[in-house]
Length: 495
RNA sequence: GUCCCCAUAGUCUAGCGGUCAGGACGCGGCCCUUUCAAGGCUGAGACACGAGUUCGAUUCUCGUUGGGGGCACCA
Image 1 (cartoon, rainbow, N blue to C red):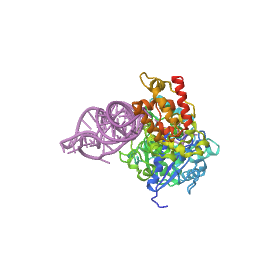
Image 2 (cartoon, rainbow, N blue to C red; image 1 turned 120 degrees about the horizontal axis):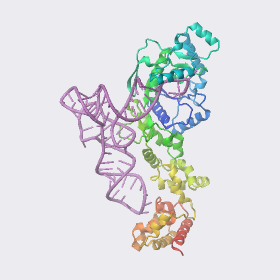
Image 3 (cartoon, rainbow, N blue to C red; image 1 turned 180 degrees about the vertical axis):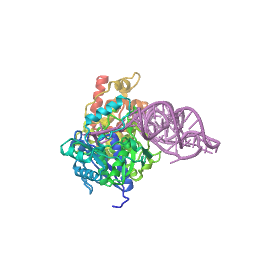
Image 4 (cartoon, rainbow, N blue to C red; image 1 turned 135 degrees about the vertical axis):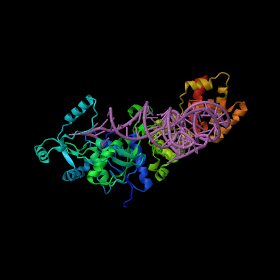
């Protein structure tokens, strides 16, 4: 490893599913690592035992894999800086604490959470700003402190922020120069009374020990950064480059939450969005290639991604555009890829697994029917169900009225003539010959194509709106199609 | 309350002192057409406001307004 190698990490806490915002953070880290020829580390931050679960960890890993965000180091992948789960790194935090104790950079604090809450509440009552911990325990005599610890008194360990510390400055790769007055930094807790590390402490230890060079994370951590820099300084570690990402908001401009509908990656997967779509779309929420290009395949993203082109502004997650983009990806994915992705939805439409396995060619032809008509795969079952009706047909009442029963139209006449063409075994059971013959029929009857094709469509597909007619017919069984027309003729016109 | 951040059409964005303020989604119209789509052409639509700096501000500075985030023994 060279000293200049880029190392980034995505560090979700397994307290829920992989959120849209988290996914984008992951994508940026991943894309940046790839673009820089660096290393992408995945780390599980499970120091909150009350909210972290193994199940959530698995859900997150699954979502990452589904998105195609492969990590070079992390759970299951291993790596020389492991383990990659915080609860397995507790000894490293203990070590760091011991080091700080030895150097007198931390002190035990015996104030209870209740006391502190009360102080905070009182300050707010009096209309005063609560300016952090009042440092009551900072000046307790070390020997007395040790006596109280030995006596088993409950305590946390706080960072002794140097009294003469000037403003904390750093250069954010997205926001530019940042400056925070040091006096607003209180002596934050590093280790809880149960001995577990707090988030800020654990992150700094891990990022330093894992040699992370660029911390790319959500905007909500911007105010945490000066605190963390204080910890880096106390520990004597070099600070990484920070890059903070603006938030992703819901349509109402508020933070994305359950109220806005789907918020997790797996929900989007279940509604029939493609991973390529999600990566492309999320990448563009706060980053642009050139301001012009909107379809950006992952290999291009991995080549061109740069921190410089990340936006500072919060972005609203607009599902309309996501739908459009997914449609674009479906349109260009090709038949065999499509069949893989569409499989479960085809089964919902009425196909059987066995039928798909027996004749994949036939099913791949269905791609042409919907390639330009699908935005999400969950639209597929309804759109293609008619292909699997066999000899049955379910007639849409409105379509029957408008197309077959419209006054003055010669729908019945056209349909009966078409029925004989379709039933004619001498005409090959293929789209073109069938379609051409029906076109000829239009001329013979001196009717506009529309008035001939639409009745046929309704009789076979049950609806005046459907994918291309004879391309569909070709994929069905001749006897079935004829049976459907006969049924329609009987139900609509009698006889 | 306090600290920090942000501000180009409904949405995602380009712009980095002089542009007809560009692209994409969505919306309207036209073309194509056996339906629906897709596609092509086309139209409407934006620099939050107010002061500066400057020959000239969307762009630089300050303020106002609006929005967002942090201020935990959560991450």
